[in-house]
Amino acid sequence: MKTKYLKFLVLLLIPAFAFTTNYYVEKAATTDEIKKVVLEGYIHGAFNELNPEAMSKTFHEDFAIFSTKGKDLSRFEIEDWVERTKKRKSSDDFDPAKNKWDHKFDVVDATGGSAMVKVELSKDGKLIYTDYLSLLKFDAGWRVVAKVYHKH
Image 1 (cartoon, rainbow, N blue to C red):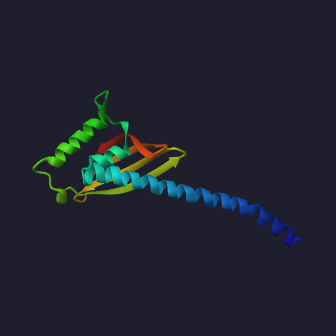
Image 2: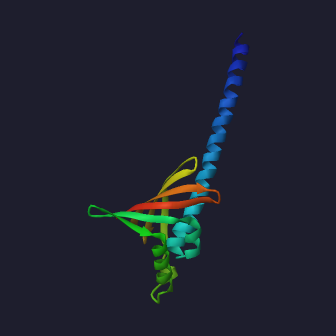
Image 3: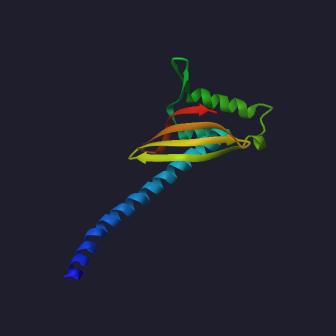
């Protein structure tokens, strides 16, 4: 009698285990995909390498950085950020060897085609920014659509 119940229990748990395992494998793959996009186009593109091409592939054309100014909401458009990046990279005082930003992914969370990333950016061992990035998955892949941040 016990063997019959044990077989029933095993048959009941196998599909649940398979579904759960598949869910976590897909979630890990999605998390890795998002981290790669953020690393290449945001951390390296906008900070370490100042690479406008990488930024253009990572940020949606309607992307903006949102911050507050008193009671008002400030919006910094991607076109302005890319232009500033180009200008900074071409300036005489820009030294790529000294432009090293370290990062730490605190949170990467995705539900379907929506995601958010909390990343800390440090320079010379000092925490400078905590950034919150919103991403959406388009036919061509994940793109960053908005950023809010805290400067330490």
